[in-house]
Amino acid sequence: EIIKPVVISTWNHGIPANKEAWKVLIKGGTALDAVEQGVRTAEANPQVQTVGLGGFPDREGNVTLDACIMDHNSNCGSVSFLQHIKHPISVARKVMEETPHIMLTGEGALQFALEQGFEKEELLTPESKKAYKEWLQKSNYEPVINVENHDTISMLALDENGDLSGACTTSGAAWKMYGRVGDSPIIGAGLFLDNEVGAAAATGLGEAVIRTAGSAMVVELMRQGKSPYEACKEVVERIYKVHKNHKDLEYLQVGFIALNKNGEYGSYCLRPGFNFAVKNAMVNNELKNADFKIK
Ligand code: SD4
Image (cartoon, rainbow, N blue to C red; front, top):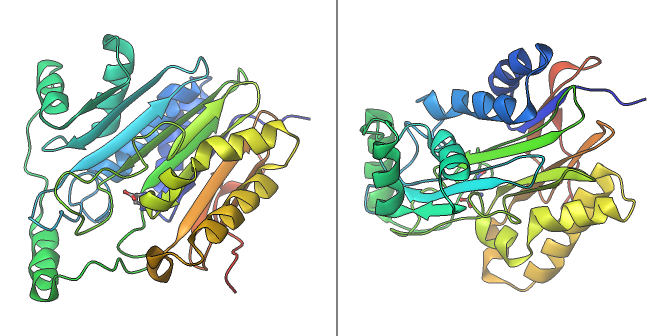
């Protein structure tokens, strides 16, 4: 029996995000609307210092945002290196629906957002500015595992109709170089879905997820018959193998969530500390700790 609707999303802020997404799903709304509404909660929350408003800046003090969205028809939209817009996920959706393209970046993305009626805002909050000033004293780039490269919100949903959608939005790795783009706006890396099979999304060090086409691989493994858990596990193990002798290993954390067409979900990460939130008719928006590779 297929348990639907269902929504899953990454980290603690998945709880309020799922709650919002559920309001859409329970009314028979689409997974697309659900994931957009869901992740907007994290974008708008200044306490979430790794997504949207209040995000940690890059090493020059700029808050730059990456986001993407994908629906059951494989339509997708994405923005990268976007500044001054609180809801990049909604801009990504506009790129999907209103342009002939998939991805807009930097100044072009900002210009498009303003044309679409989004407001230009200051996203660097006093708290994040303070953290930045503290970071500047040492200025070393070794992201703290589960802290500085964590908290991207990725969300996957299966609606009443049996259709999948996904969304992913982040301010990226804290203290990154100006212009750095991570996995989160890249379809196939930070997010991927195939409505015949399932959906997957990533969190963690984007460089590692891009190198391995992470989310696309998870979906492909589900197509070959693996459960969402098994598919996430195999890709994390592959990422570990690829990075065994890599300089990034020291601060490498990656985690995946996956959801298949039957409403089954799963997750796996490299190191302890990654959790995700689940809401369906059986699980009432609970946080679950992902199983991990490096014990
Ligand atoms: C990035 N993947 O920009 C993002 C950061 C992240 O959880 O996921 N944090 O590399």
